[in-house]
Image (tube, rainbow, N blue to C red; front, side, top):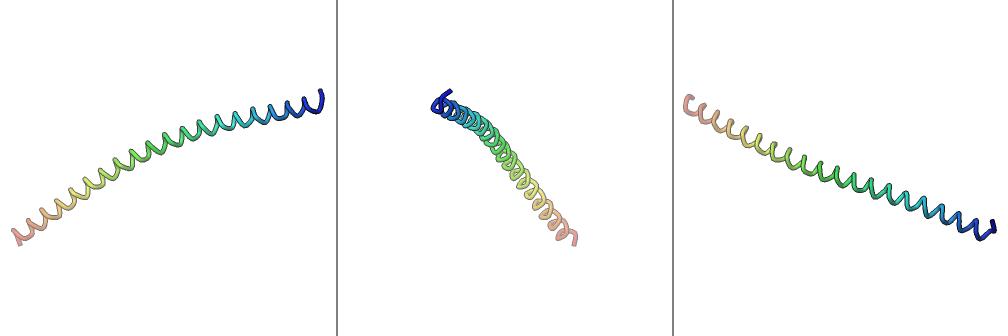
Length: 72
């Protein structure tokens, strides 16, 4: 094999490794985007539940204050 052929083979090997790395990174990126979407959805659900709980606690406090005033 001549020097030029060896250089071409070496370049071809590098290109193959780069293509494989690109495929790996694309798959990892896809996976990370999916995880990010799931986490954003979960966060929104938790914020909504937290808001519901806060509203319930505030309502209970108001009822207790009302009872206290009526019986106090």
